[in-house]
Image 1 (cartoon, one colour):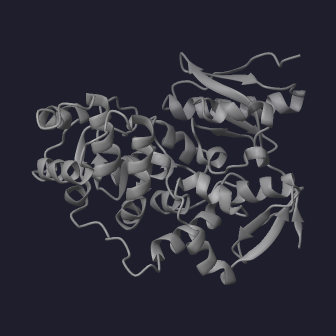
Image 2 (tube, one colour):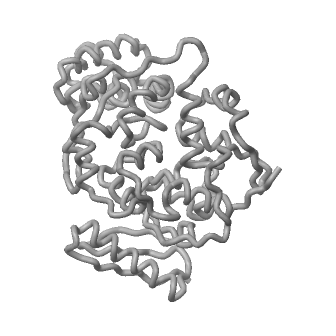
Image 3 (cartoon, rainbow, N blue to C red):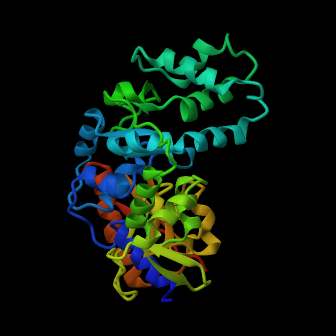
Length: 366
């Protein structure tokens, strides 16, 4: 069986994640191809798409949010994602059990004795009028009926698990600051969510396997689970296995992939790319060694924005007074610094709506 080294997996990841060459895809198609973008920080998807698409215009994403073609909601790993509306409609029921268990993993004691099905019904009835509500509003309306759990636990269970809701604009619009207001997902989309499969065939799970590999492969089944948070996908993997090709990584783990998906030459040049906080190009794997060194693995879960140099995490970045500030994690050559500064200046211009192209690369460590 062919062994794919770290560099080969890195270049495959960059190609699938639209980071090797910026794509000409429409924004909605890009969001769908990427299986959504991590979006708990509302402005971060704009950076993620700017790094991936040619001539990305934030107004296009705003329009998709307002027209309800893309949606902000809790889904994979119980984190907020920006997803194509069609994917939310098809995937949400497949995540129900995982979302409940993730909230219970944090608040099990506080929610002990609460009939979650009864709470879910009450939450859906409350939201059926289509009025946007914050989690605090929802808890305030139901706390008298469920006084024992803490308000935070009750709110998390309602909004992140039991009641499928969309976060409404202006939350998530370009350069907007707005609190989270929730609307029942079926009301927001104007159609009911797809029900779960009852015959055990799990077509949604099978589709998710294919979609994940298209955006993240080659990958292990453990990587797939780390991306979505779902435990029950082995049957879906088994069902589509005959469609797939397999490889091994350098540790001997089986890698699954679609036969015709891009696997570039490991020596393919990789441009500098600036990634937003919690970008799935890093978080979408259990083994993140293909893109980030073990010493810096914690950056991906700490909310640090990172810079890819030759395809690997080489720096973090932040914005200070319309200046993009790059903090190297290793020594930069003169050409490295020039390439990072050029791309950082373009990012500064994008973030400031062309009012500033200032970038500062701090001294390299050591």
